[in-house]
Amino acid sequence: MKHLAQTLKALSDPIRLRIVLLLQAEGELCVCDLIAVLKLPQSTISRHLAYLKRSCWVDTRREGVWMYYTLSHESCLICKEMLLILKQHASDLPEVESDRSALAAFMKDKTTGCPQISS
View 1 (cartoon, rainbow, N blue to C red):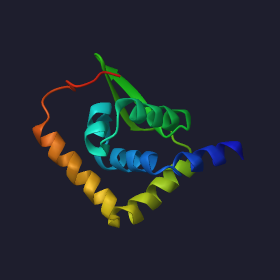
View 2: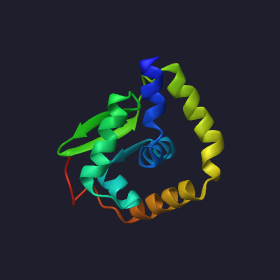
View 3: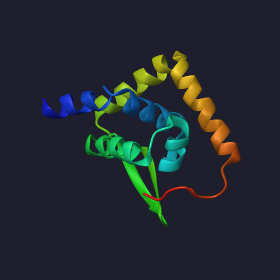
View 4: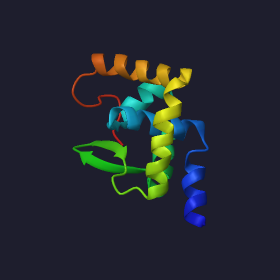
């Protein structure tokens, strides 16, 4: 029961939900990508990513000084099913479209790596 509650609670915050939806759409993102899209400080983004990691929603990969995040490949069945539901229903939300457009614009102008931060 505790795992189920923590899994659901992780998505109850709009910022964490937006992060999960961006990772679902893009596959892998750096903290600087999320900062650019969500317009939040690095500390806030990192705190939410840590929460998602503790809740088994995301995995990390370090490359040099940069940390990259993906949706967990070892997700529990509940997470996998919830991701399917989100994929079916969340794409119609204006915030999701706005986040994806902002990410696409940022990625188009982004050079290799993340110059503004390291996590």
